[in-house]
Structures are given as structure tokens and as C-alpha cells.
Length: 121
Length: 121
DNA sequence: CTGCATCCTTAATGATACTG
DNA sequence: CAGTATCATTAAGGATGCAG
Image 1: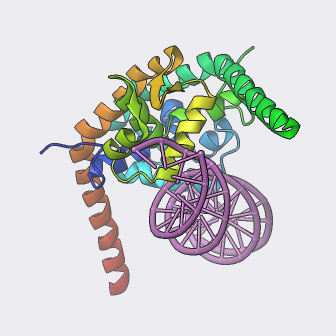
Image 2: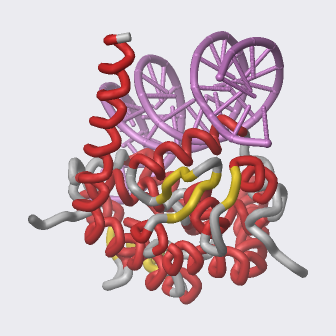
Image 3: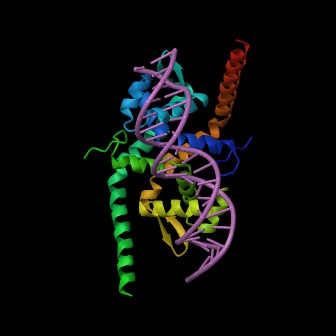
């Protein structure tokens, strides 16, 4: 069977949507070093609500990325295969953020100028 | 400066949210081979609405991932650095989807059993 | 064809209170 | 502590029509 994320109804797109997600990335990255409790995850991933954390953990558990064993969340073998690609996203985000912020400033001030000129006409 | 996606208000988290996104992934992957027109992107990325495509393209343009040159969207140098990590997500999604679907089936039928037992009590 | 603007619907997220 | 349940808010996504 040929799976293709570009195909509207291909299940692989739902899988992509699940892994291409900031909460998923932070949870998986947090669990790489070893199992953690709910509260530990809640502390490390600043700003995540208990509801969102619960929902995301259930969803990852359903997909077989992690398991819950005596109060701790642990990556499965499948989940560990996500370490590398998701860690790469973290590294990208943290190492390119200054460029991105500069670009945003430039873009926004260019937009401001357009508005300014428009007022002069 | 130390950037950290786990910090609630760190700008790098907004950047992570932008790249850890299925539409971003599909757009960037589509543009790796060369510039494309709006309509070409709209065709390749099945099921994306014009509004979402427009919004996502603007957002990526703002962050400096791509530029619009005479009707074509083209990755910038910064955007091309996303090729590898995002392509990795595509490959993961397409190559592990069968495992994921199996896991979902198992998880859901286990949940059904619990409901069944609950009815017997 | 390439968008932008609008309106509408749904999904994601957040806040709070509550229970085992 | 580890959730669940509920409600409120916000963001994402989609449909349609219009304009350059």
C-alpha cells in the first residue's frame, strides 16, 4: 500500500498531524531521558493545561507512542523512533529564532510603510 | 541568550508551533524541488482551503522561510534548512502509519471491552 | 488565476472546580 | 497527586463571493 500525506484522506496525514504538533514534540522530548510522572511533565512543559496534557498523552498512548506504567509515562520503541526528528525541530526552533524574529520585524515594518504611504495618497 | 521551547513565554516556542505543523510541512516539502505557483500548491496539497493556504504562506513569508517572486513561492536559504527535519516527519508518518493504525485498533477494542464489562456489573 | 474579505463551523486550548 | 468534567475562550479551518 502506498501512503501519502498529500492525499486528502490518507491516514498517514492524521499521523503527520499528530507528530507535527508542539505538545507532542515537547512530551516526547521530555520522555527521552526516561519515564516521568504526570506532574513532572506538567511542570517541565510550562504553560500546558492539565486537560491538554491529559488529552495529548491519551492520544499518544492510543497511537502506541508511549505507555503508562505504574503512574509513569514511558516511550515505547515506536515512540523512541520519534526522538530524532522531533529533537531536530526543537534544535531548529531554538537555533533559528533570532533570524525569525529579525525577519518578522522587517516584514512588519515593511507592512507599516505601506500603510503609511497609503495614507499619503 | 538562552532560548528554550519549554519556557512558557520563550519566542522559540512560537517558532516551534509554526514549523511543527502539518501545513507548513507539506508546503515546505512541496517547494524543495523548486518554486511553485499558488494554484500548484493548492492542487498538490489536497484538501487545503485557499484561505488556509494563503494564511500559512503569509506566515511563512513573514518568518522568512519563503519569498514570493513573480507569482511563485520559493524557499529562502532559511526555509531550505527545514527540508531535512520536515521531510523526516513525512517519512515517519508514511512509514509508521500501519503500526499506528494497528495500535489504534488495539487501544479502541480494549476500551470497548471495558465498557462491555462495565455493563455486566 | 491569485488571492483577499467575510462569515460560519469546528477543533484546540485554557480555567476552574471537583473526585478517587 | 493525577486526573476528570464542565464551561468559556480562542484559534484553526472551511465556504463563498468578490476583485485585480
